[in-house]
Length: 536
Ligand SMILES: *[C@@H]1O[C@H](CO)[C@@H](O)[C@H](O)[C@H]1NC(C)=O
Ligand SMILES: *[C@@H]1O[C@H](CO)[C@@H](O)[C@H](O)[C@H]1NC(C)=O
Ligand SMILES: *[C@@H]1O[C@H](CO)[C@@H](O)[C@H](O)[C@H]1NC(C)=O
Ligand SMILES: *[C@@H]1O[C@H](CO)[C@@H](O)[C@H](O)[C@H]1NC(C)=O
Ligand SMILES: *[C@@H]1O[C@H](CO)[C@@H](O)[C@H](O)[C@H]1NC(C)=O
Ligand SMILES: *[C@@H]1O[C@H](CO)[C@@H](O)[C@H](O)[C@H]1NC(C)=O
Ligand SMILES: *[C@@H]1O[C@H](CO)[C@@H](O)[C@H](O)[C@H]1NC(C)=O
Ligand SMILES: *[C@@H]1O[C@H](CO)[C@@H](O)[C@H](O)[C@H]1NC(C)=O
Image 1 (cartoon, protein in one colour):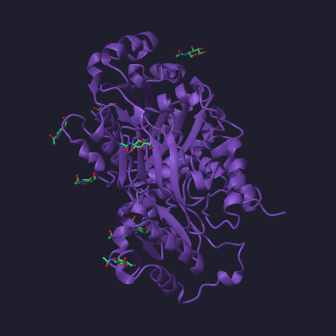
Image 2 (tube, rainbow, N blue to C red):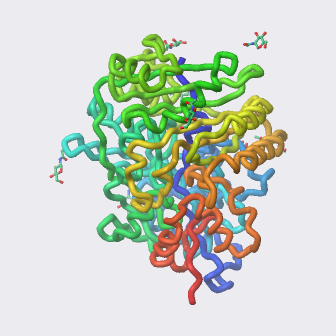
Image 3 (cartoon, rainbow, N blue to C red):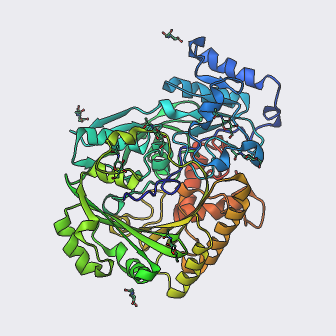
């Protein structure tokens, strides 16, 4: 009976970092030389004697392919030859911070790019593949996952290759009354998730993961390690919502834990159209963002045997006897009954939203880094500040019905999210929004790809009148390379502004200023990294 919404849907972007020697450098540095690869390895081993041979893995190593595939979460990016995406020349699998520092220095010298992967969930595969012909080195942070939970001080240091599941498990191991407000999908890496915002089932009470970051350790473009104090408040602001990839390699976060009750309530109610589902959904649009902060109630819309099914799934930071009268008063149309609710511990609620059975499976399942989803998908996001009209919904449902493997996840805002100023972190989508929509479509074979991509692009076009405008807001952790493709001129700064305003709105200009100050040569670059202001 557990809702299984953690296949593609709650996956979030991992740290995508790449270092490029791009246009700003002399062309001599860009001309590939036959011994490029050798010189990267030689440079690396001059920093680390050859007892670290397992750290730099070349293409011809038997370790290469299993490691590369190990955290590709979307088969769209598995078949790199088909998509003319490039694969890394080397995978660096660091076990200590000095390996990452040496990698940065040597990548810079060799003229490669660098991309960094923590959990591998980024929606466009940018953390391990490239659409440019520039050769690159992948830093896979899967060994960087120590987690130190300090219950006395209610904090934790978590390395960026750790997953959300590992973090939640380590917190619950030490306390039944502490939690952390981040995403539902346990195999997502904390590196990219926190750096792009990071929301989950308790964000209406506690805000985003990024809102709870107290400190960070980051390797900069010179291979130097900085913390909050040495990086300064501008850069510390930028990496809490602006993505780590544009600014450095994030090694670890220090986060503030939050209190959770010893007993919480999970519940789920499903209605199809024929059971009045549309009317219940319309009421949901009106009330979900106004419910008390300690109640999270999201809605899932999907086709089911020729009709539309609405699934309302909730987490209440309290007990059933308090929840039922509250729902009876605020949302009686849902008809929530005691039988649809269950009192559990916070970590069991994490299991529930992750798609595990709650009662009979050990929470150790959260330590499993292998994703259950094995297929192709494409997703997009929107924000709404008013309910979608009945007419708008009709067209939406018609399109959803056409696509058996589609799903929409609607996440109510309000609560704490409406109290935090938009400029507090680079994540700007706070006050005024009633909910966020994630559109998802999944499929099984390469051949179906273009069909499904077209379907979701047409749906996105259809939705334009019903969602936020100027800019049409989008969530950075649901990165979408379609955004900005409609740029009229080809200047990359102008193109970047199109997606930049959608993801960051009024914070985009400050991100550009921070980027220009800390990385003027645009060393950390990717297809959607923060651009550098042209020098005057
Ligand atoms: C590996 O080399 C480093 C010096 O680069 C040395 O300090 C360390 O003890 C060596 N480790 C092993 C296991 O040999
Ligand atoms: C990795 O994925 C590629 C593309 O599907 C495949 O050719 C290769 O055999 C896979 N390697 C391993 C070790 O699974
Ligand atoms: C809590 O923080 C204080 C001050 O930083 C530190 O001295 C103390 O050791 C911390 N407690 C634990 C259990 O680490
Ligand atoms: C939602 O609210 C609007 C105005 O606030 C109202 O007109 C409409 O009837 C409400 N719909 C439902 C289903 O409650
Ligand atoms: C699907 O709907 C048809 C009629 O609309 C019904 O006969 C059939 O039992 C349904 N199948 C399932 C699996 O619900
Ligand atoms: C756990 O419960 C589910 C549903 O109740 C059942 O299908 C599954 O077999 C159980 N698993 C174990 C390990 O008992
Ligand atoms: C980890 O999860 C994967 C995917 O669900 C599963 O195939 C595998 O058996 C799990 N491993 C363990 C040790 O439970
Ligand atoms: C890769 O693409 C080829 C050509 O379309 C296709 O035959 C093959 O099945 C694809 N492999 C995977 C793993 O999707």
